[in-house]
Image (cartoon, rainbow, N blue to C red):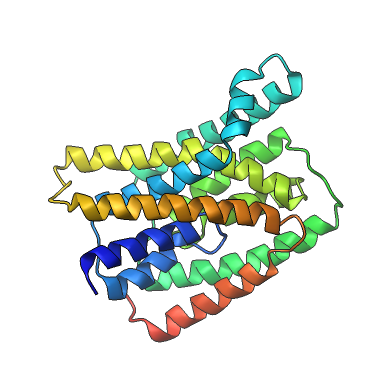
Length: 264
């Protein structure tokens, strides 16, 4: 397989898994086991492509939030997004600086996949008992911010899964409403995280010698694939539960523990 094709496949995989509640980290770990390890810069760029896809999907909603401050409901929603982001930033940055993060190796990622799948089943079960609640409360905003920090500490957790199901447990039982809030708060969160990681690489002179053609191809693939996936998921969850994703996570985690070498 050529390096160009490998870059294309990794970009597609990032776009497919970044926003589905299945852990992009776990899937990229498996893929790079066969397609070859990539630099941190490469991984940051393809993640930025996935973030751009979400921005494009929600461009009208973002414009509405940016220009609709005279409307009380719009202003309230935007402030809750800001609170969720600030909680993630002010709690997550000290956690990152302290080095509180599990290694991106098979065992912790596999267990995060399994436990996250079980968490999804339990969260959705209890959320459905509340009925159809679409409201985003301040409590939901704060807990979504904290959930994003937890996802950063435990690779394999899936940021979207942790945050969506925390929102559902905290009171926003309507899947589509919880997902929209999580995706919107994920835009500044993930752009900030990618930017911070990029600055760390610049500071450490670790950008290395990149093949910019491969980087550009992977970025474009992640953006295009991510756009399709987010649009599909937002329609899917209006009428379907997350059960299939939860089972998939549990099976994948078990297979990782059984088939891949410990420490890889």
